[in-house]
Image (cartoon, rainbow, N blue to C red; front, side, top):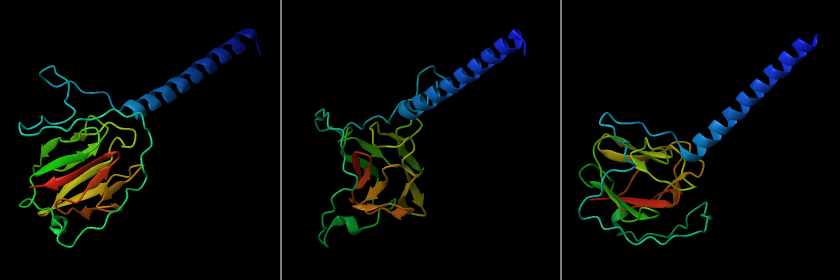
Length: 187
């Protein structure tokens, strides 16, 4: 082989190696920070969550450097007179209330459309923590009944202390845990 051919092969290999490095860096960046926000027609960027209703007053959030989250929440027995035995239907619930996590106190009105929950800006409810997947779970309306579906998340979705493997009917007031955030469906 001539020196010129050898030089061209080395340069080609170096370029191919750099494409591989940039591909890995891009993949890591999109996995860590999510998909880039899209510009709306009016020139503004998309909003993470719907605006808070006037009556919602969030509880104070204390910053924590504790990065450990329990893999499985502790299940506490419910009394039989608990309101969580009633199924969550369009007539029995109208909002999501976040009871613990970074957005404690936030209330989101429920419509009739599916609501995706995750770290991605494309989600209807954006939860930014290390234990939530980009597209973690989805609330869907099955007939008149609200169901929770896990979207193959890493840490799982929990409904009333039980891990969700397939779409599960939600009960009014039953805690639903996604990452480090817990919420309930209420009237």
